[in-house]
Length: 71
Image (cartoon, rainbow, N blue to C red; front, side, top):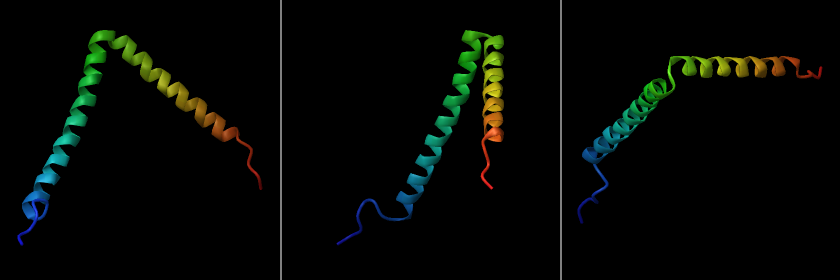
């Protein structure tokens, strides 16, 4: 009996390049969505969203620092 269709070096290379293609498409999608949001909402709105993200991060850091430590 011969080898199955899912075996061999060629099929492994195909899977590897298919995986890389999908990852590149995910990255392109994320970058494209940022540009579309920037176009639709304007630069000020995107800047405000980033500022809100920084504020939330600072609040969580403050909560973590104030969390009681048991010695």
